[in-house]
Image (tube, rainbow, N blue to C red):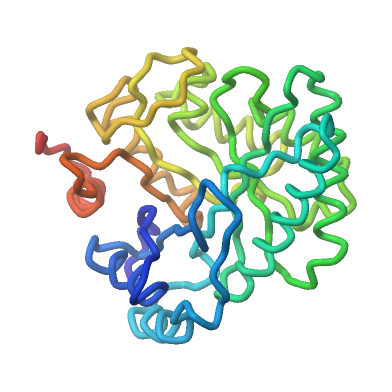
Length: 289
């Protein structure tokens, strides 16, 4: 089996649903992938029975993918970081609980979640809100799914802006063994971490949350310079981080067992993932745009 755990975001839509997601990942030369269980911008979800899950799982097995390393992304409308509107907060918790159960329904073990925004209520309030929501969800979901809190770029009052903050959230929950992080290279660069110093970044992760808590890496270049707090992804080698730095991230032996997922922009309405995965496999940038 190919040792490089690399893949991308893939779509899931009628008529093939999950089977189509797996086929799309295979067409890019992936060894893993990430998907949403429905539209990312709303909470409407089709019943699992409709989604050709068994057919998709059979194809995953046939191609030797490690199902434990396939990633689900929670809808980004979930905000568990503030309790200003209790109705919205309760809804966010319910949607997250449903998404954790759906992740298990696909046979997957990792759910990536944006930590949310404290909406000017302060970081400590944000942490308290996130901890309470995670405790509520993980006390009753009945699965072994792990939630990976995604590192964010630091726009506005976003949470998840440092590994120290992530560690505080995880340590305050009742279920630290079921919570980890997803490191996004674009986001942490925009938040003033230098991807060229990735060994130091991994040391930081090891000394805070622990490397065993690093469950996913999102591999994205950035349209904006380091420290910009903008969060705009760019194709590999066409942004401010650069191909060489991102290639070193992907091939770093300390995170060999961590799934690496591309979320780079489509070009002319076409996904770039086949060529970008090929570049990373060969450790060689091609000027293809």
